[in-house]
Amino acid sequence: MVIFGLLRNRDDAMEVAQESFFRAYRKITSFHGQSSFYTWLYRIAVNISIDHQRRQKRSPLEFRESMDEVFEQQNEVAKDPFSDVHDRELREKMLSAIDDLTPEHKAVIVLRTLEGMSYKDIGEILGCSEGTVMSRLHYARKKLQNKLGAFL
Amino acid sequence: MSNCETTREILGAWLDGELVEAQAEACRLHVEACAACREERYKLEHLHATMQTVLNSSGSKVQFDPLWEGVQQRIAQQSKWYDELGDWIRGTFTGPRLAWAVPAVIVIVLAGLSIDSFLPNAKFGVQPDNLATVESIDAYGRNVALLHEGETNTTVIWLYQPQESENDSSTEPSESKPSF
Image (cartoon, rainbow over all chains, first blue to last red; front, side, top):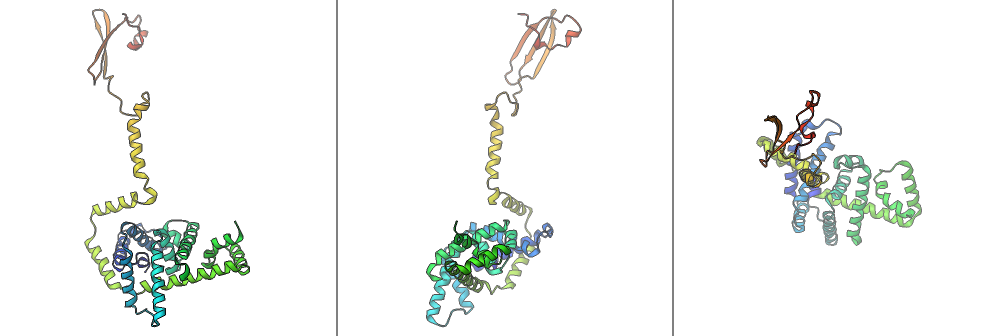
């Protein structure tokens, strides 16, 4: 889910998730228990996702198609047509705003919002201090607020 | 910096429950007293809730069967030693923190190789093998020293006074005065 939140493309997320588990399997001997296992696993997955984002920049249209497919599959489209339009527009704006964030800012937002992780855990996963996590979250939220403006 | 600016910088961390008690209390008191910061708090809460809805709805139906099939396939194929070497090189040299390492190593190597041209007296680089052999021979009662320079094939011959005593015989030929 975190990987999908970061990449927002089903095929890419599946590819990265498989690679993450495979690398964890290969490098299990390098896990010495300094952090919790899930933090270690998240670190692998998030690092691969960030690398993947840097290597492969997909077009926004491809993202939107991918997301629409997901929403339709989940029957989450509101029945009220006005609400439907507003929700779709808000989703598109939100996803586009998140997509414009740097991979590091996107990572803190997704880990905090989706997983509700503490700043300490996020710092361990991303290899930075809690202060850096706090600062990145502050600037990422500010950017999102500026982009979304009237929609919120 | 005004109190409002300071509060807004830590507002998100306060809502996340990540501030220490004293800081959290100061933030809470300010937000209760300041209408603008209270408004900011509601905006942040709304942003967080909207993001949760959007991101959760996008990833809640992950299909695990194809995921595990793919992982098993990768394990079965097991990467070769050169893939692991490639992973190690990528991990070590392409990270943002070590991005400077490759140019830095190149600069250090080039500096090491060219230091002789800047400091000719320093003995850092490869020294030319000019003093290949120095030999001393006795020719017709006179002492002759021969210097053969390896690279240029130059031979220098000079004569010097024979030594007066046994004790002086240890003196280096180059330190004695030439006889011509």
